[in-house]
Amino acid sequence: MRTLISGGTVVNSSGSLEADVLVDGEKIVAIGARGSEVSLGWSEGADRIIDATGRLVVPGGIDGHTHMEMPFGGTFAIDTFESGTIAAAWGGTTSIIDFAIQSKGASLREGFESWSEKAAGSCAIDYGFHMIVSDVNESSLKEMDQLVDEGITSFKLFMAYPGVFYSTDGEILQAMQRAAGNGATIMMHAENGIAIDVLVAQALARGESDPRFHGLTRPSLLEGEATHRAIQLAKVAGAPLYIVHLSASEALDEVVRARDAGGNVFAETCPQYLFLSEADLAREGFEGAKYVCSPPLRSVEHSHDLWRGLRTNDLSVVSTDHCPFCFKEQKELGRGDFSKIPNGLPGVEHRMDLIFQGVVSGQLSVERWVEITSTTPARMFGLFPRKGVIAPGADGDIVIYDPAATQTISAATHHMAADYSAYEGMTLTGRVESVLSRGTVVIEEGAFFGRPGHGCFLERSTNQYLV
Ligand code: URP
Ligand code: ZN
Ligand code: ZN
Image (cartoon, rainbow, N blue to C red):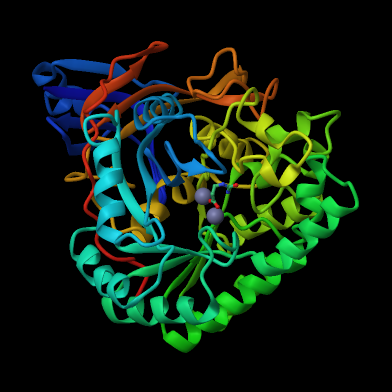
């Protein structure tokens, strides 16, 4: 199957050009100056021609942080690998990296195999795994080396959630030392969970049970403190560090300092920290439960700093931390006790569109939009140049994007399984028009043409920013 995408503006992180793109089978095979379809006879040999006139032609998005079917707080994230990856495709994301979980007392391999079983045959787009390490011990440390050889090259540890995923500083240091030896990147949920649990217990004892207290008991200072500690531990171990879902100015300050000093320290933020705020968490009645995630939504001053961080590359990536729970029945578990509200928001479908608003407002160039949503995650997580770029030899993961279309986000029209949208009623400029995943058209003219099982497991190499 040969597909010609003609007449569009090809946008890579390195620059934009008016060009035609030829895809043969699963791969991009050629890019030619506009008119190549005629001068090189590409149109004659093509089975399908997509007219991209007036459109951007960009590499498929890579969402490096999702939690399909994740067990949390006595329930499971509501998107399956099938529904979540179909929703991702609708939004122009053609690869996800989800988190396989090691349960306490179990091995890393058991976690990897169990998550592989859920994902294999279900994903509509390509997928890889990071590994959540919740039981650091001699044998799980050894297993990290084997998993790196099998394409799991990043491991998430938690300074939050004591009794669940939490690791002590000593355990974190040991995992980092292992990563320093095997080339893996340590991903960190940087919030001081021990101190937070004290604040939560005190708040509940005072009868403060509404969703807004979720935010008030997780102050930004404790994210800054944990981020500082994680950076120091990584320095001692000599391991690369990637701070996940960074939400607070104090945490960003720590990352800036470490990067300015030349450290292999990286960070992502998420659309919810750029577009939503503590005011959403404080919505009337129990509505705020829709916005409970950790770290929590903060004041708009933090969002301004995060946008700055994206411009200056102190924040390298935007991922979603897609971890959706229905308002009815799931978020309800925490009515009367905010600490029992499952943590997480739906978002995998809207990341590309939301971050495109940075282009619309003039805060980001269109190339930077591609960089933080596709190219950098590809390099950070060992997928480049197979993913994250429109170039000969790369996978045919391509989004044809209409920069002038408008859309209004709503749970009534989104494809995620959650029964609400955190961005309900928000009107955006820009819209995904067509999506190709490894050369196959999966979204076109408002319809899904993909299939569960089309997505392949991505065996990843190590972080390509390391020297
Ligand atoms: O609230 C969140 N972030 N839920 C998902 C789990 C995590 O810590 O990433
Ligand atoms: Zn986390
Ligand atoms: Zn997460």
